Image (tube, rainbow, N blue to C red; front, side, top):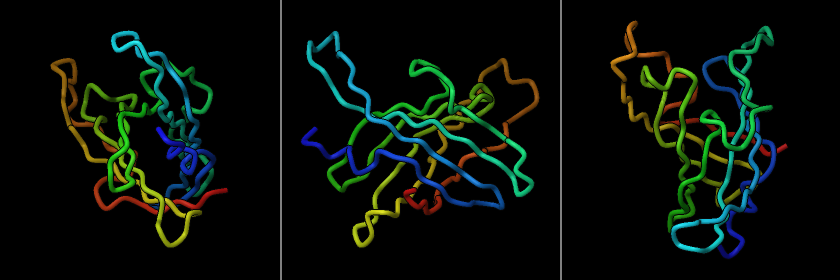
Amino acid sequence: MNNVLGKFVGTWRGTYNNNNYEFRIVKYTQDNINLKYKEDLLLIRYKITDNNNTVIEDTTTLPNNSLFVINGDHYEANGTYVLTYQGKNYKCGQNGDLYISIKATNPSKMGLGLYIDGDISVDCLNGPAQQILPTTGGMELTKQ
């Protein structure tokens, strides 16, 4: 990937809707068995707390293959990286594509936003789940 993913790696923090977000981004190399090559992608684990420091969601200790670790998909020509997101209520619409991009004028700032797929399973009996990640319009994060 021409070493373009390294700029995303690290711990990033920000605030959105009175909640505190910490995203831990790592680069991961995996074998693409079908195409017989290795590929780099990003994985994101996160912790969300409210103003009282009560944990809303924490995926920081989950293994790489967990459904709830945000999984890299592709790097776009404009410098945006796209990842696949499934929240713990993914059957009720907590799912979509997460877009991250480093600010051109300040590499210690990153924009992040979720574009909701909103797919809802027949197993979802109580209607759509509340989104816990910033949606379109997103948020700004600062590298720690």
